[in-house]
Length: 119
Image (cartoon, rainbow, N blue to C red):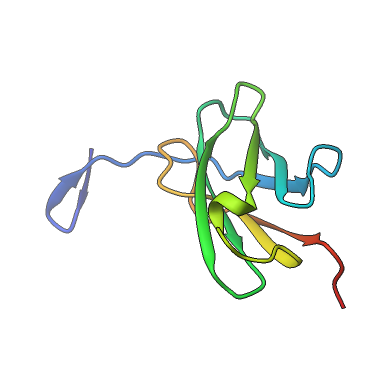
């Protein structure tokens, strides 16, 4: 416990992490984006928020958790996320660590995924 401004608060150190993110082109399809990634140093059980923004600038979110070696996988089914839409265009996908007890907030990774024919 450390005194801060006359109040006693518990201070916990957090590790700085780096996120890597890429599309798994072998398992992605025309309507499904499969993302794989990892955090370094590897931490088990870290929750990440995956954000996907479609070509019309509409965002959707999914939560994933890392496994023992720090890797994670997200399957983004476009007809489920954006029902009744066309699926051609560039999707911007981000992975962000938020509110972690072990890892410092603010780490982010971005990847662009193209579906269909784009001009």
